[in-house]
Image 1 (cartoon, rainbow, N blue to C red):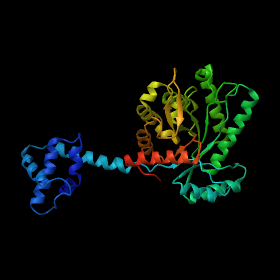
Image 2 (cartoon, rainbow, N blue to C red):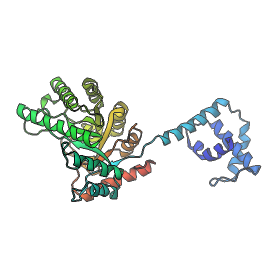
Image 3 (cartoon, rainbow, N blue to C red):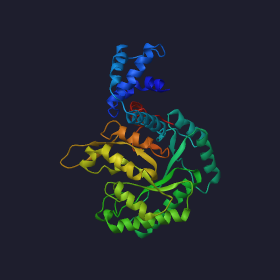
Image 4 (cartoon, helix red, strand yellow):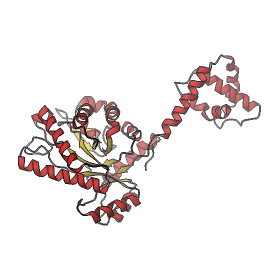
Length: 365
């Protein structure tokens, strides 16, 4: 058993900086001895003299601790690979149809296993059941129901109407079994519902957002889905720390995280170090993440900072970090392409993500 282990892991051990050099010599020496005795074939790669020569180094004392540490390390490598989840990639489709079965099949034709919820109303139970059944039959999960309204509109009447719309959208997400209903917290900007405003990072904004989230969740009391708020560069939450604070303040099991890393990259520091920022987001928020967005950021050179959303692969977002962290989550949170203009751009972004995943040994559902 030990000899088989050494043969299978010989070259991995040699390349690992964490393995004891003495143990490497031990493994190579044992394999060499077995080969000379005819019990094992020569390895497919590397010259035969490698194992034989290193057997002479076996006389260096190798401790039991070295052996157990390496065995444990190899087991950890195998275990970590086994726990990486296939990624559920999705995006908009351009097929003209209201038939849920046709729409679900189109997602699969494009290589998607996640989808935006097609048009529906929670009160239309027959339509909702048809969507849920058709998508499940193709193993396509409904990643999100968008509820893109300003829950903090400075106009009181509009705010009430918007809150009612968001509540209804959460009801649809619950009925259809979507992973989440997603919105942003909103804005006090009277002209642009998602725009900047001096009070958008205030305690008043934070408290009002907590109240809104609780109201939406408490009215529907979802069990299958989550209500989520996206990060924005100029609104709360604007990063993992403010998001964590919001989760703790809302204090509802049905409140989750929709991860859009590009929305949180709002400074040169985060842009330059976006891989570190991505890992920080997943480390702090991972157990609440239920869905994610995919796009890229390009720095447009001007006399002030200007980040432009572009097709994945045309910008600087570290998709190796993004996909690797996504695959480690306790749930298969979908990754949804968004904000692109044409079917060709979505295909380009999809191919880039697939190529980066392949380079990192990651798979798709």
